[in-house]
Length: 425
RNA sequence: GGAGGGGUGGCUGAGUGGUCGAAAGCGGCGGUCUUGAAAACCGUUGAGUGUAACAGCUCCCAGGGUUCGAAUCCCUGCCCCUCCGCCA
Image (cartoon, rainbow, N blue to C red; front, top):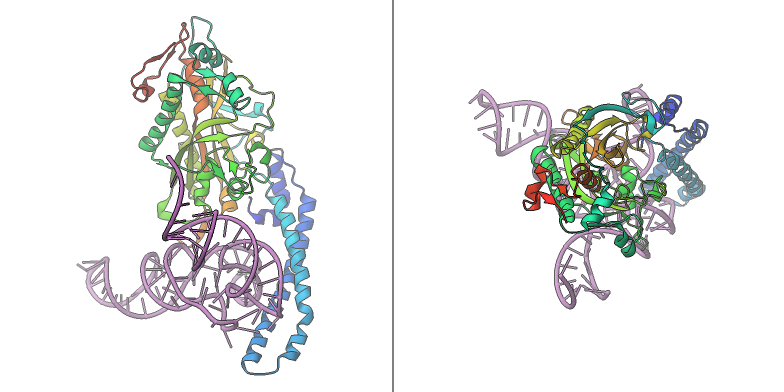
């Protein structure tokens, strides 16, 4: 949620900024509603004032044993008038709120212009792309030949876009998770948390998945209306919903390993082969809650923390900055990390690191108490994948494959693999 | 699953249908004292909206209702606690 003041004062300028990301703000509708809201609210409040004053004087008169009948008669019509105005006002506010809750965040001034993926800008390439003296296979074939990765059985058990892993490959998958968590907690100063995998609507509203992106989510059908989390960002950032933390506790850095569930409703034909795009995948998430003046540098650090994983694993990657139009709803600025995938001869997204500034914090009333002023102020929230485990597994398999179809276990993972150095049949 | 008790400011916790945005304590902030600190004492201290600043308005879990007037009474929901049963 953007600062409501933007909608009252600089509506034209705001519309300009949002157009940069391909969002058309309905300036006329909003300003008309806003105008109505203002006059109605003033009217409503003066009626309330009248009611409060007369109720008070009736109370006084009664306490002194006076006859209150004439006073009651005088306020007779007030009640229904007030009820009508309040009903109209709350209807109007709901309408306005419905519009504003669907307005995305404003791009940071350092974000490149553009509306499509092609307009994203490459900032750096890190690591050497591996060369093979044989035709490298993709992870689907590698996994199938090892007898450790099976999509057909998964679709029997559940349906398409799920996977079954077995034996050392399942262990490698777990090893990656442990390695990531240990790196972030022991070397990068994150606090590990365990959180629910189902959340309520308020939490999803807080991080911005609702009300606009319901179709991307798996919703439970019983009367509690819980949703499966699409990312740990939701439960972890919501740790601070409706909280006021002391400034001295900042910055807060959390990491969590969770499964993520996405319906992928809008991407039926894309990446149907393999582990790139699944309904269920594991991710180690990084979340930071910081003072406003620190969020720009916090995004740089957080992105480095994600990069460190790729570097330690010896995977080649590139760092992209997303153009205004390719960013997520809540983000002001996003770096994507893309890992080299040999079978596709392409870099593919493996991490997305964003600064939301106060956009989510305002929705969820996540605040800190300033030591200087003693007043509560909105936090800035950031998050990033550190990393998507399924995609990392795929990258390790393909980049570390050998001519005989075996897979060398990266040095840093061996302690988590009981010393196994090569995964083979 | 059964029975009961609760949700009040940053925290703990009082609150009679009317001068209650709300006692008290803790914590925070300012001060006195002190070389400095602690202790003690004095003062101050909810969030939002609005205003040039006041005023005004909203908020005592959420949503409805009763009433001239609701933190207080009624209904529904959510959450927490205690006891019994069941259970990994």
